[in-house]
Image (cartoon, rainbow, N blue to C red; front, side, top):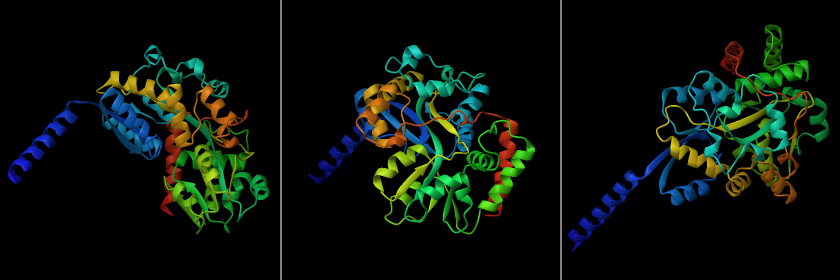
Length: 351
């Protein structure tokens, strides 16, 4: 009897594996903690497919891996999309295959942001997923709102505070150059002298209490007593964290900041382009985009989602991202990219 049961269970397991292998599979390459797992499971059930979520921690790492491997849907940021498109690695988006989300669904602020990109049509190669800006999360029990607003980015130079930078070269240099030169500097056309000024500011900022993180910011600030006092952060993190911890504040410095867009795109070497379109259409349809945004905390590019979340006060005012005339997006500039990476490598080598 036991042998019969073992054989029966073994057959069931074999049938299960065979069923799984016969399903269509989709490989999604995305940031960590950036998609609702329940939504992914619902998609798998509805379309009888398997979705493999593969995580990356930076655009630079993502671009390298996209060049070397095959994914069906990817979700890097604006300048990485531009780099991949210039390199001929992305499919041109057929918007007719995304009926659940059209360009007309984009929020007015998002459309205004797109006007900054005059010589590259990002919507030809990708579909908006989330967007936001870069600012400062701070512990109001340690540093006051008045201090943060007066100092702006320079608060990150305070040696008496426990400071966090993301280990992202572009953002670090954006912060330093904005701090030194103010809102008028073009972060995409910085001169060697301006880069040197930014590097010097960072040298002064990095001290014994400085930490460089990748994805641990939620672990830090969800603690009752955070181990960081002020942190370079993304607006979506502030949207999610502030309701969870009353001691936290958020400020986008007066010297200007970076506004970013994370996009969904289909690599040319995708092995399942049809399912990729089905997935993108599903994720960006109103009900799913709303549920995903509520769970993840980042701002949706859909106007109707933004209006629902704001009108129903599901998140604080941080959810409606403010774009000022002097805030900029990062653009793909290979020469500038290499210079910034070299500066960051020098700075990180000593820390």
